[in-house]
Length: 201
Image 1: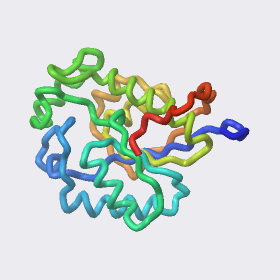
Image 2: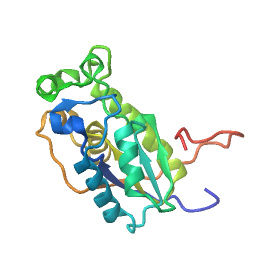
Image 3: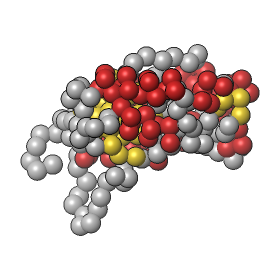
């Protein structure tokens, strides 16, 4: 860190904007998802909220709906946008693209047990924790915006506020214009020539 004191990261989380699947009651999971006209408006509103909010960088899931949200929100700005597959929604496996009404009653069963052909919510938490470790190492003291999915917010709540994963997974859906977290500093890794952050720039 070039001698800089280790500082916490101020992390802002925003959910990707509304998709056509959201409006149709479909659980998109690892499918790309396409923003609806309302979603594109919401992405512009997100930009209005965050463009002058001291954001040093934006990190998004590499799923289309999150990437599009970030690109619309930060169009014509110099804020860097990084995609990272560790920020993907939970993979519902064979239930990707199925109705939310069919998926919702099953969520509590897949906290530790993967969805058939997919992953568990605990695996999303582990991927998010791995991402936060890199973030704390490489973005010391920065204000970072994360645009991702509901499972990632649940993971952040567990990892950074001590919330219970089971309670979050089974709670009713909730939206607000951003959540704020503090990521504690971490010791930098030993220098390794050619070593780069695992985020995809």
